[in-house]
Image: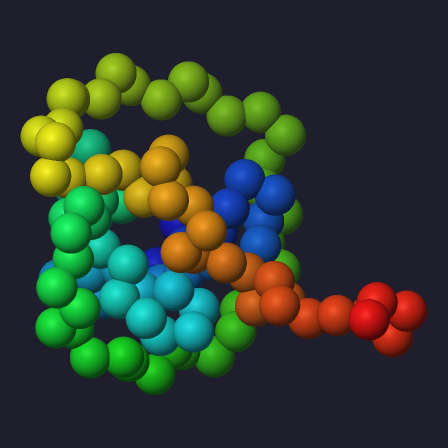
Length: 105
């Protein structure tokens, strides 16, 4: 993460964060919040009472380091809370996730 941008393991922009640790997708939809151990968490049954927000301008592509240390052990979560990147990664797509090339129908 390079505030406010959140990148996936290959350096693609997948979201952004606010100062109060709320996380949004690149399209401005609410995703969840950062936990104390920096996981992105979300309620399993989200009420969708969070308004869509305008995302910041797209950053330049980030080149992640070739090796990273292993993450620390994570605390267990209650049933009603999910780790977004572990169980629901599809709600944080990249900007070009829905783009098609000319040869695709």
